[in-house]
Image 1 (cartoon, one colour):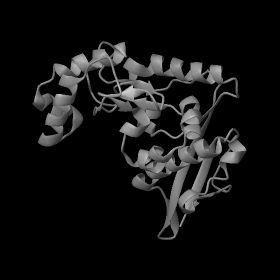
Image 2: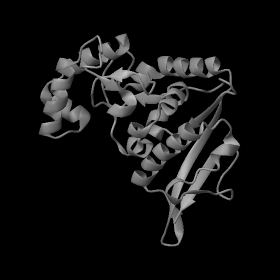
Image 3: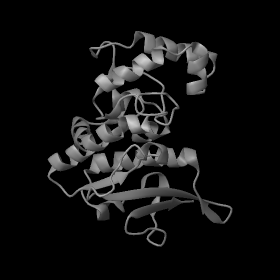
Length: 229
């Protein structure tokens, strides 16, 4: 939270024009986020904040559809799911957050550099490694993040088995990746893992939400590919 507060202080120094340029937003969204950063304050409470997994509303989180989780699902997600964030670094699903707009790749001048990768990389990496260690299970990460956000982690030489996942649509006689469908599919995959409490890479291959099927021909040891169409 102290690191997040430092970012908020940097954002508060920006003029509306600078904020619009940084966030690539129109006048309405610029004013909304200008107010959000102005009003951001601790402590976070259920009255001024919302659980992270319920606060985000992009395609990934529509696929995840956490509002329909059971108590058991929330418990499992809290232990196994991590959300990478430009403002908060890394979040557990039930961590309270106040709304914001800020990509980790945003060109925000800070003490560590010109964007937020260097600002967050050590803390985020250590947090994820700590969670892996405390789980007492094999050190496996299923990467459902975009390339933009996955770069926040530095796992080289950390003895972690990272499994990537890709989703393809069959269009015009070939398999292609379509961003909006890929984003939703990442959320669907996370939901599948949480609802079924998947613990092995082999069991991931059973994912079949919204007509996706595992493709052994297109997959490799460290990459699972799912197709549909």
